[in-house]
Image 1 (cartoon, rainbow, N blue to C red):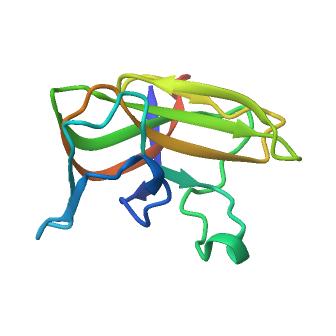
Image 2 (cartoon, one colour):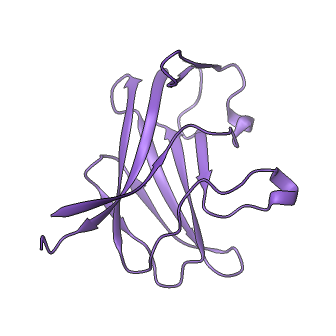
Length: 149
């Protein structure tokens, strides 16, 4: 199985502040982002990345690259959490009129997703699954070629 690097994402702007009250978020000298909140409920969206934005409303540009329909991709996330493995990534797919047409929860770095044929844009969310603290470095989007040519 071959993998081709598509993009590297950093923490970027914070778009999901509604669930992070009481959190201590800091940028370390290394450039990594550290978040601490032992009272954050499971299911809270910690961070969100977009492939399409309404610039007039958010003053933010898209951080996700365009993907090709029918192609398989994988997220390679460089982060640590306490306790271990307590962040889940969700990829949501949206159609022409912004209706959600699908989603995929990625529990392990080996899990892949296929970009749907009818998808116009997508988002990636980092979701708390019992995490008390995390240190996020980066996330790579990789194109997976399962043929192995």
